[in-house]
Image (cartoon, rainbow, N blue to C red):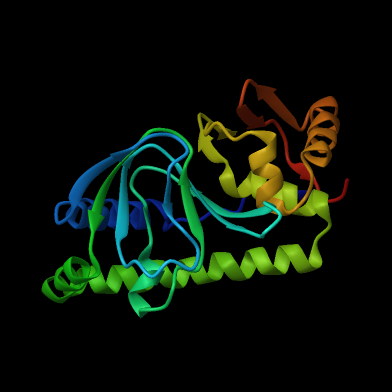
Length: 219
């Protein structure tokens, strides 16, 4: 049995809704630019700003006192980070820029005013937060129930987008970043990739990954 990317007929509609919501939200913030490697949100911090990503990519992660990291997500243009601060609790994760980034930054007050003035935006936000909870639940399930290969395979399928009949991951993820997403070593990612390439399941060109055929269920 092979692993295949599930089809979702509502994906295009959801993407259009997100684009409109994020565009309107960004118009209410102040534009700020940060270089690569800037920590814009620190876990435990009491700040309440929301960052709409206009350009660049950021990493959302948890870390311990020894510097070990677990990556929760990598976000790019058209997304936002920092929304969980609006419950008045400390930040639940840290966010660092992976490349030079431009943001539209809203304070908690600006964000609340936007939502009050735009009830349709509030509905979208609720739907998006529910989606993020579902993704978090899936990640917890994968960490608890799948072996390393299973987690890697599911991550590849989740990141891939269909282009000209092929599933392709064009975002420049390093093997270290992928390892942090699934909770394993970079060496393990390298071994799995080597076997998948040898078996003709994936093709790696630079940091571009294409899934050539359905991934095996087990490794």
